[in-house]
Length: 314
Length: 274
Image 1: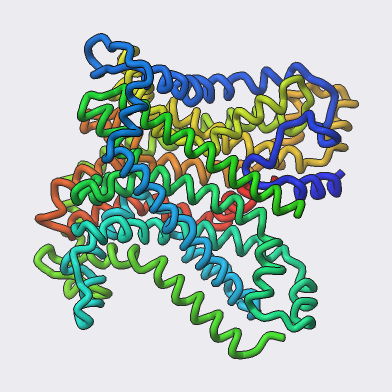
Image 2 (image 1 turned 45 degrees about the vertical axis):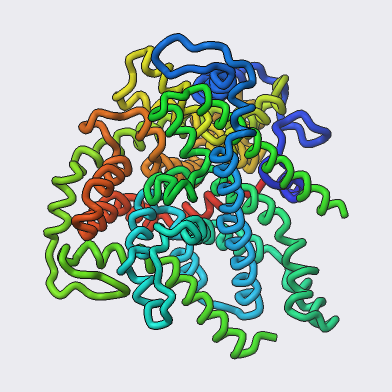
């Protein structure tokens, strides 16, 4: 039994790679049991009532023009048209896509490099390093925001470090630096997740694969391309999905640092959702942005899973 | 194959990244111990040691109440979500029933679900039921949000339990309830602890829902209190804001220090195992 579980485990990939019972031979074991529904129902009720139902409700609201107080008026697709035409809103979506570069790409690439370095050396005390590197993942983003507001402050640590080189600036206050500065906070936050996942994956890679590669005279880069990356495909799919989603959301960080400023340079969809719904009284518009954001997030997750699956068969 | 140089490089690089990960945290702790007049950069150690900034933050940010709110909400969400997820995990992990794939697929959507997309209707629905400015407005939606990961996690646990155990119990005439409570749950402690630690952390750190649902200052959670306090105080006294940040982060960091294996196991195997 346990061997069939592990082989199934290996076959399944990423977040969407896994399915409930009912597929081919990997059915959940046991006889059909309707009693299962008794165990499912309470949780399912919470889940549907507090996540899926509101989501449908958001879709419904997105077809209205509504200030949240008086009677709403049917607006059809007007809100969606406005999203396409409004430069500020489009800009917010573009900002969140730029953030993916930091939250996901940079964190993943650097974590992979770090893993490579560790792989070559037999390092002791990894648990200790891992505990420290994962720490940012456990801290409330509101707290992280305070730490980095200080680090990026005009007279903060970063500028003190850069002043001798004349590179100091108002990181969160200037148009060109605000978004990248927040992006690096994102890298800082997601790096720990990428690292511990890759590390766990790396420890499962048989040493023989590396030995074989080295006998064949593989360079570090070839080792990475031929052994590490294919073997970590699973972890890569999960990390890229999770960090990309974090980047696309990123409400807590931006609300607590720049609130979208300066001049809207760090505005992202999640901030626009809250502003439109609860400050500007444009609930329909906020809902439409929320729907578009959800579609993008679901699409990204499915896309990454697909790519992960395809590279598996290649 | 491993050379000395490889090893030194690895330690240096690991040390560097550990430093980068920890620096903002240590920095803000050090900042919190400074006087508000000090311009604190880098690793400047405070010249005097006092908790004055913490007292200021504690009172100014109303954190006695904030920590209590966060605690009540996080504990309620954790207990309820774990209990509910044991049910779903048990069903998906050990039973066969029509629609299992479909239902599980729908629940998996919750793993990537952007709940930014639900706060708007949640706000208006809770308003209708007069539940804004209550703990319910924070607890109920977050139980819903935690079900996805909880189900995923507990299902993996129940799948890993030996079939023979369940079958033997069944032959002895045990009901599915008895099997769960008497046979399987006693082995589930580590899995349950891991899940609890993660849900507690996520709920404690939650911000957006509190921002939308809570206006009453006596009910603000710790992160929300920190956000308000920082906005009001940052320009005048960054050290008090740093102290407030430390107060908000400390409970989770303490839990993390003691249960770090669980946190990391939860994230690594939870994300990839299946």
